[in-house]
Length: 61
Image (tube, rainbow, N blue to C red; front, side, top):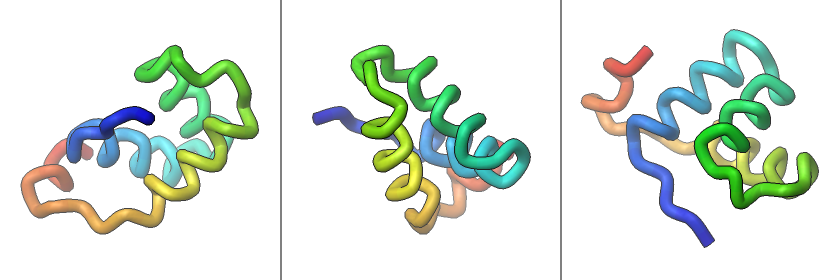
C-alpha cells in the first residue's frame, strides 16, 4: 500500500501523456522504490492515469 499525492499523480499522468506507459512506470518506480516488478507498477500507473485531478494539481504540468 502506498499513498500518492495530487502532485505525484499529476506528474505520472503528464508522463503517461508525453512518454507513454513505460515512461510512467519508470517515473512511478523512481518515486516509489517499493515497486520491484514492472507489472505491478504498470497496474498502478493505469489506475493513476485514470484518476481525475484536483484543479490545483493540474498546475503541475
